[in-house]
Length: 214
Length: 214
DNA sequence: GGAATAGTGTCTCTGAGACAATATCTA
DNA sequence: TAGATATTGTCTCAGAGACACTATTCC
Image 1 (tube, rainbow over the protein chains, first blue to last red):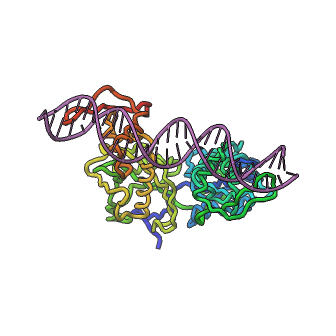
Image 2 (cartoon, rainbow over the protein chains, first blue to last red; image 1 turned 90 degrees about the horizontal axis):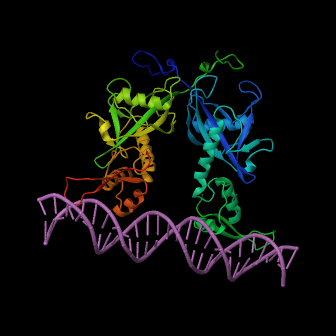
Image 3 (tube, rainbow over the protein chains, first blue to last red; image 1 turned 120 degrees about the vertical axis):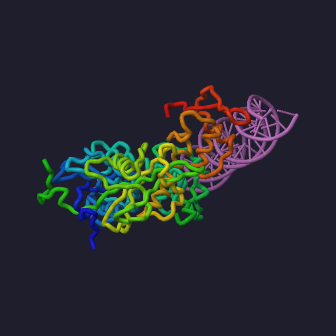
């Protein structure tokens, strides 16, 4: 049973914008946040780099569309895409009126393939559409996510030393941290495994996991 | 010149969701945040209360659609609608697949008419669609907006005593504040006008304005 | 003077930040 | 033992929070 308004029209009878999702998939590499881009080989905007994106299907959840874009465009399995907001500049897409629901995701480097192209997320260079702005917004999102939590996206693995965790935070936040302050701030939400790191010079560091499930 | 893809189709040839905006217009009344609702008299969902909303036109900015919804549905001039996020539950609208870009706005009570219906924003009662969830999200938005700023939306007017400002904050945040702490936290971003309040018993209070333009 | 409200002094507690001392490993 | 890294003690500073005292008005 299809709904019709007072003039007998359905929703489909009205002109309306297209809806896309674009995903800034972040990871930590070389001590900083980088974002996954791909180069369009054929068709619209061929030769330029862009974030993976796709049009949203009818009846599809936005988060599912974001995961589908990651899978189909760059062959990566996402983790948990989160909405950043809708980018609605009327001139953002030359093909027509396209709203983009920007998403961000953050995964360990191991989830990506060797062939994937990563660029610095805060300064991604020339990208199609408004994708550079989306990447920068994703950086803010990641920083808010990590500021008061040990490792919500598991970038440090299941067991880690405090120094390894500090390196992760420094990469995400983009600034150096003081080791003693960092340590005291994190300790409350970590649990000691009892094991220690080994193999390097110096005093072995204790290994930790998350106190709660995550 | 209309863009066509490899199979000769335009964007309009693909099925896609409709896009709506819904606006939680907040104000402070009776010492708390309230949200503007209206009752649908005819057509879909007649008899139930909902937030003002409308379908987004092609080429229309989302913020403009939000202002248009406020103007056309409830006759109120909005201030500065801000995006809360996209609500995308496939079952949220029985008419078909409709994404709602939720917006929040916050204006002084004087902007509203006497006939407008306001309900407590954190507990708005039965509303159509997912509008109760949008209203609650708007409350969080307003609280974040006011937590570290004196009066970003001018709820206290252009000149105010510290106690009047405190009442505004208590209404927005939903909790009582300590006057001396509040005072010291705010003073840095306020400027004394030199004038004092008068007319009531007790020591007259100094009047303040915002130090920067806003 | 007394009631009422405005404004301030001060103490405590907490956490960030910084510095440096101590502990424990490898080579 | 020397070098390297991990871990902790402690001092300072700033701000939140709480309490109570002082100040200034109206009646």
